[in-house]
Length: 356
Image 1 (tube, rainbow, N blue to C red):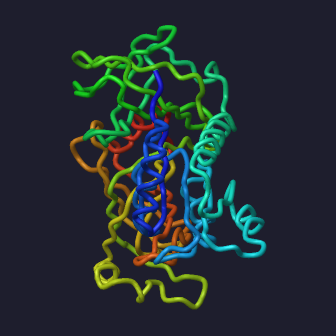
Image 2: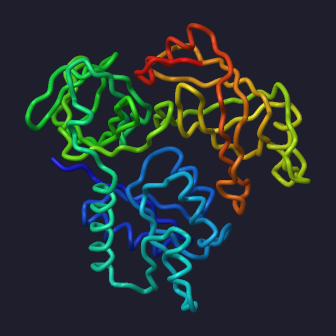
Image 3: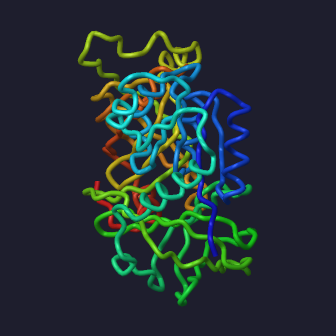
């Protein structure tokens, strides 16, 4: 059983997007569209994509400037740059900036489909490890995330059986989902986070869910602390603000009134990108200088009814998209203290010993 592979089309021409979406849908791809950079980043931060089609000129950004920022939040996703303008050296510049191909409009749609298929297949093979390195053993903790339908949150689960073509998991609560629904499965290994795409083999009964066994597993990272993809709203409350090393103001006064009000109150809302035993990455519309200290609050549905309350230090502040309004920043946080209860629950999310 195959699952639909997802593509994000980033172009400000609605008719062109509809044509691409119709063609790619016929080839069994799942397509999302974005007409500006800000909407694209919001979608990328909320769900994974297998490929991105990026137009060179957008109302709020220049595609060539977006390429490295897209690479920062989706490093393994192939990006195809599209343009209707013949510019000398553009192809070489685009490939150097991170695109895997450059297409000049109008292009043959059948050729596009072939290119998309080959790039996604090549990307899924690159950096993969044999499944035996992360065996789907009975009792292994995993995290599942449905990629379509109303169930957008992540669910903790445990492997209950493993067959030749399927494997079963037990969830903490009954889940209503149709057969064939695409799902992302995350498995925390000792050296990395492993993820693979699967689908529901048959409709679940009680807390039991049968999934299609993967043929390939992607190793996403190798770090001191295993990091898992984690998409939740995060609130940061400023304890102590540091200053940027450069001459800029510690807060971006060109940002909208809402962000300026947040800066004055010391409260910031963002979207978590990754979570580990040592810290997390958060996307904010407001920069925070390295060295600042914050209180972090976020929820983990299915793990705890109470929000996590932690303290952290800002160790990194990088621009994800400085051209959008408001701009987006990637904030790296290192946990400095947490309650025993939060420490115990964090073990449940990451399935690894935690030492802070």
